Image (cartoon, rainbow, N blue to C red; front, side, top):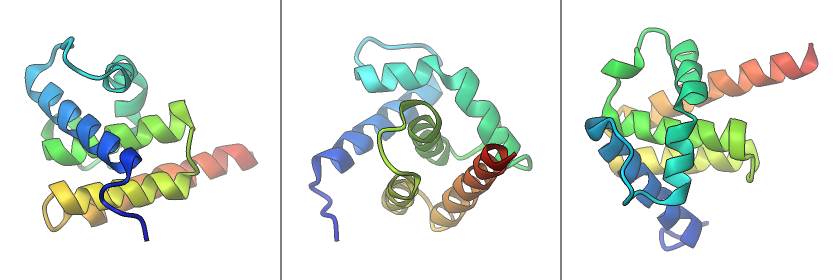
Length: 125
């Protein structure tokens, strides 16, 4: 079992906190890490994936912490591709348990699961 002190987990916690902050600021901040800056620059690719996977929850009305977690996970899944998708989803669920509401893990898992299914469908076709 992984530990909460894992450097990768700690780095993701920081990114989620910065993305959460960004959702209120709506402007880039030089205090954000370079990884967070990369995610912010790619929101035009990330946010439509959220809206397609969870159409009943528009991005502007989503819980801000769930949005931050999803943005990080989708960036990792579709753009940085440094980890296997199962690791990314597991980490997103852990972050949602840590920071989100009691419904967050289920929502994050369902949304990311839908995105993975859509990716696998496109790869096969």
